[in-house]
Length: 539
Image 1 (cartoon, rainbow, N blue to C red):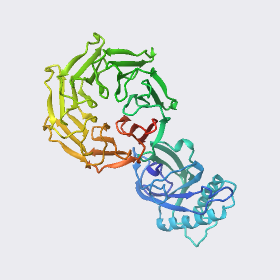
Image 2: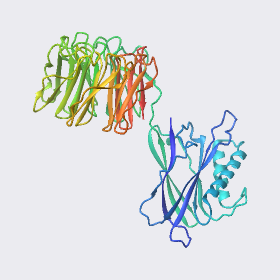
Image 3: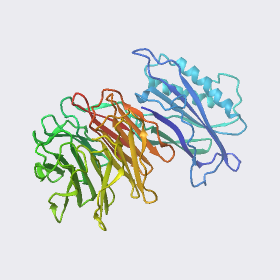
Image 4: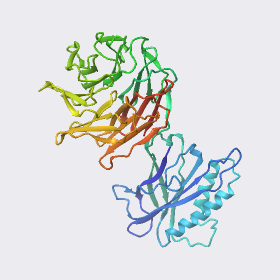
């Protein structure tokens, strides 16, 4: 995992005691790798001295620091690199007031002394001892003690300290700042250093063991940024779940509906507000079942919201337009699209149709609300076209209409997501294994469908999309080889070339889901060939 460190800012708290109107300072950062090569085998000298500045006109009456955001001094080559143990890296900071000296010569002086110090400390009892000696030797040489070469000290050494790392600095994501104060020669400076973890795709790993999940049904939703729930249908028709939180990590899987409640291939979940989540599935008898969690009830006993014979296996979706309303949609055995909804005033409404028989093929339906007074529903038709309808207070449920012609989509895979209230994207897997899309905006209406991944990339039955923020959307699919592929859109890149995030044989066709708990993180989940649940994340 890629960690970087950089000098972020410098601020003058007190100017030096010289007669000049302001200070001119520069900073030398000496970084050394100290991780032993093996038990009893110390690290060989491997280090580099970085210089930042000269920073001119540094005055103690400046209200704001100078923002440096300089090149990273870790890794050693400026490229972010992992740190396994905080003691593996020694970092020494020197602040120098520039008078008549040559900063490049001071940098070389420190370079020579650092090499000698690290060579002399090979037999030290610990990496920490080597780092402490390195800081002491650099401080001494800048104070004119034990100069390794003839050198005229024409600049003033304000101070040298060790930037000590601890376990809390090896952050899993985001950034963290560390502040140091340097005082000497009448001057005082505050330096702020930034430690950051570059976002990346993690190696895939399991969150539920083999034989927990049946092929074809997985869903995930986050009630708040520090919690995510994942749900699946088990081989016995039960509904299983696990969750992640900072306090627990990934919890052991457990059931929320007993055996025989759900048919493989159709499950969905949605959280109307941070203290409530609903889960929905199609039962073996074609009924629609649900359960929910709240702090007051825990997991409620499962109950039906649509009677037997209403839904075909393989296609159900839910979305909440606002905290006091949730809609659930399914494809019926006759190819119609049915729905029900919940509100505090009505409870669960009687199911009713929003698209007549013959409009939708089993296995693919999705819905998304762009704003509280609008919801769109999409499906794949028996002819491979993509159909839709929508609801608004002004129109009620609109008559269904096509947004992609016959032959564009394979049965079993469609997803939609809205990056902002005036835009919605719809994605599907094509008969040739390509990934297609269209979008709506007020300026364009429904755009002509176009491909974002070529033929052969995706297997029928599994596609998902999620937007981490308004200027980015990610799309994920299971490939014919069981790998997980993705592409993304941003204004800077347009649609990126597809690339893998999990290798072949990790996932089975028909089950993938993704959710972003906050803008710099997204989780992807799938069912493996052995019935386990796998995941990866970016962040």
